[in-house]
Length: 237
Ligand code: C5P
Image 1 (cartoon, protein in one colour):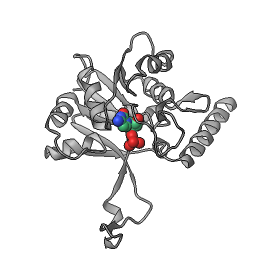
Image 2: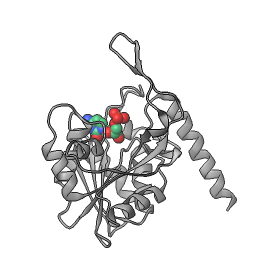
Image 3: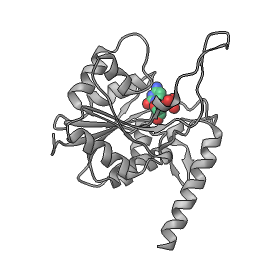
């Protein structure tokens, strides 16, 4: 696996209902560029990605390609497919379109648009080093409660054994394909969840706070502030 070719899947077909911007979230602009453009650029900057497949909101594939094309160097193959009704079906559609020479697949939410390039490289390196499924994770700062349907607390899990997981998540391609082929019933909110259902191990590497998912309006303020800080930092160099 050491020199295995790495491909990137970007599920970007969500409608962004919780964000409330009245358009597909991935095409919303922060710091002068779409969330999708930021996400793709960081992946390209990592230098590990040879092919990219974006799952676009149905009907918007041409527009999506126009947004991502400027970020893609000539030696990186890019395709855009129509996403599905769920994140899981969007990833599955993109995996089907991934070129056959790719052995390691990173799946990265367009909504985690500020994940740094080094995170892509670290996750890919862990898969290439022999871990078949790798997720970045952060320690949990809040105390989490498990509740029943009426809102009563039934348990307080020990937070020291919990991790808030992010993307990019990395997989041996064959394992990710098997996990999606076997997926039935409940939709998983991440791809590692499908691998766990196969009974296969998933390995956690340190995540990054800037890989947060733009979900609610407050996240847009945070993204704008982080991009402004990064721009100021570049200006000082
Ligand atoms: O809804 P949530 O924020 O969890 O979505 C995570 C990622 O999955 C987003 O980048 C979103 O665009 C993508 N997604 C998708 N297809 C869907 C729903 C979500 O590609 N049907």
